Image 1 (tube, rainbow, N blue to C red):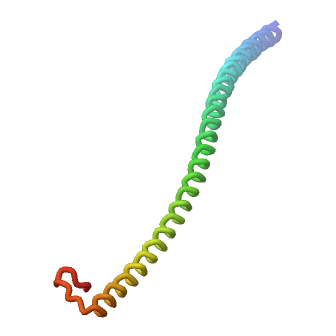
Image 2 (cartoon, rainbow, N blue to C red):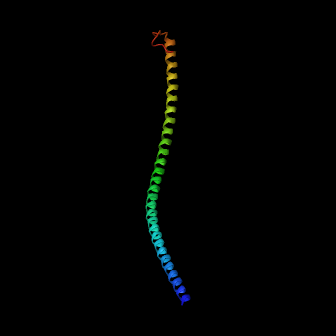
Image 3 (cartoon, rainbow, N blue to C red):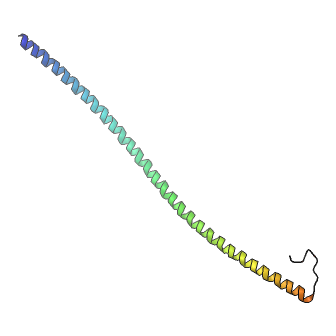
Length: 117
């Protein structure tokens, strides 16, 4: 009988330990499911943010392309202005020579402030 009682106590103790292990495992599963649910929500928010960032990047790329076009246009404008200034300098030089030739030809004496440098 003592052997049977020992086996019964051992079986009862094993059963209790088994039940506690099952309860502990269930608690862990519940916590894991909660953590996974939280991660899914966070992943959804991250995906939304990523989409917004991708839209911002696409917009910035368009802005950069427009700015490059503007810079290219400005470079062309500056180049044209440089040519215009060069042409004006040549015209001014030609006019100065013409005035000097006329003044010299007719022997006109110009006051000091009107004389060409």
